[in-house]
Amino acid sequence: MDLRSGSRTHETALMKLRTALLAICTGLTVWVGSALPASCATRRVVLLFDERPELPGLAQLQADLVRELTSNSADRIEIYNETMDQSRFGPNDYQPLLRDFLRAKYSEKKIDVVIAVLAPSLDFLLNYGAIIFPETPIVFCGIDKTELGNRLLPPHVRGILLKREFAPTVEIALGLHPKTERAVVVAGTSDFDQRLLEQAKREFRFYEERLDIQYLTTLPLRNLLAELSYLPPRTLVFYTSLFRDGAGDSFVPHEVVERVSAAATAPTYGFLDQYVGHGIVGGNLYSVSTHGAETAKLALRVFAGSEALGPQAYEVPIRKLIFDWRQLQRWGITASKLPAGSEILFLEPSEWEQYKGQILVVTAAILLQALLIAWLLHERQYRRRAERKAQESLYELTQMNRMATAGEVSAAIAHEIKQPITGIVTMANAALRWLSKESPDIGRARELLDKIVAAGHYTSDIITNVRGLFGKDTEEKTPTDVNKLIRTVLGAVYMDLRKHSIESEVRLGEQLPPIIGNEVQLQQVILNLVMNAIDSMDSPESRVLSITSEIAGKNGVRVSIADTGRGIDVANLNRIFQPMFTTKARGMGMGLSICKSVIESHNGHIWASANVPRGSIFQFELPASGAKH
Image (cartoon, rainbow, N blue to C red; front, side, top):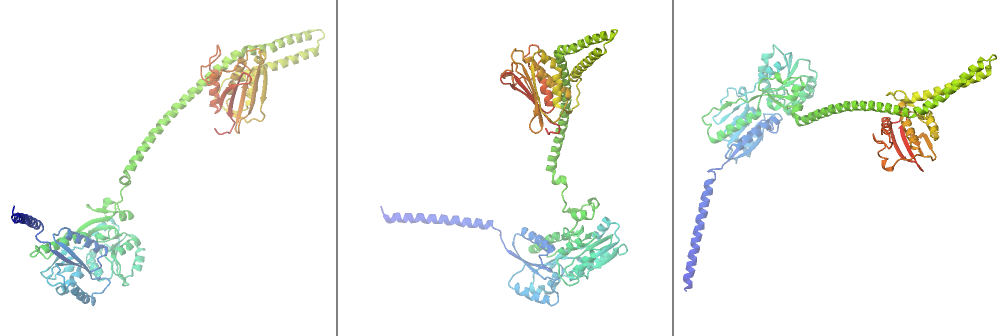
């Protein structure tokens, strides 16, 4: 194989590959170039302000103007800001120096358009623009038609006219305050302040027959604020502008209007939308913001060359009905009195709008709480009715239990009463015999009569104890002596104790505090426990009934009733106080249940335990009078 021939073949392939790559790159370059704009020029704009552009009104105008320029232009926009600072520097010797400075500064820059903001800037450019910016179009803004007058503008000058009107706001103010008698007009002493004031005066003349108009324009700001703080009733304040006060000190008009409004004892009205939020009530105001955007649109048309044959000045409707909600509230002006189409700024949302979610939640919670309270009240009434019925049932059961107990002790009571009555009859017959003799034995008769009286008292005591023990129950609770209740019960069961040969051991505590309770019900509790103890001691062994009372803790009284009977099965200790439970052959099983209900209704508690060496102990505790439970 020929090596030289193979090498030539390889070189030929590489050349073809390079040619193909070159063609692809050329195609991409053409495609990218066609996708790019045909031209992407840089447009240079100079903004010439009569005052510092950082002042709030001018700052807003500048922001809207620049935003409109940059967002709607296909070209790159390069913006330069220049200021004459008119209120702080005089226009005489200063302007030629400014002319020379700007000419030197922009000598090597091609400026596409110069925008004059407010009348002093336009005057300056009409005088020196051809020197500083030769053959450069001029666009003006912030100039009223009256300021422009009848002057003839060069062909390269055009602008947006600002229509300043003062009467519409005055009309609105008088409509909102129909009893107004005087007006105070506040203005400054700078050239701009005076030009604006002269224009306002021309419109204020129409109200001189209706209002006493006073112009405060030559006072130092401190004295001006002092005057405003003592205004008579039925006065309105109208603020135009104040760049410089009567003492020659410079100020920012937006800051001054805040101080004027704060000091004035009357509502303050202005004519510029930028003053809303700085103290004025509002009015039919001219809008600097809208004016800046319209000026930018005109500058864009100048760039495009479409304004060559158009009019040189445009009057654009840029007025707005704007009011400050806070000032309306301050002076008691209702929103319904404002003209139709009014815009209210700084409107505080109502409580409903601000806290709608919270109000709904709270309302739902209140409704739920109300329903819960209603349900609880219903349940409370139902419970009270149930408690009353239960109490009535308890009274009835207690009364039945007393009657049953009375039946149990009736034989012993009858026997106890029968003995003294029999003795009374026998002794009375004997006394009659001693008195019927021829020689009556008065001494023996008197002795028998004394015994009869003693037996009668004994019988009366038995009947009194029984009546107290088995008397009718009431709901009344009074201070009660527990020891007295025990003694009454022991008096009633004395015969049963003697009949069953039961020895009683009574140890009653001294100086026990009284308890608040129902005597009849508590007597029934003690009687039930004593009768149960008597019934349990049926064996021939030693029979002892022990009753003690003592102070329990700090604020209570404890009563213990112990026996030496057959006792209680440990398995039944938790059941003995349940209704219908009994170990007696003929018992109803309600006695101990009634005892538990009575004690608990007195805020006490009752329990049972085994006695040593045999028998049972029943104990209950009750709070003393005045104890908290």
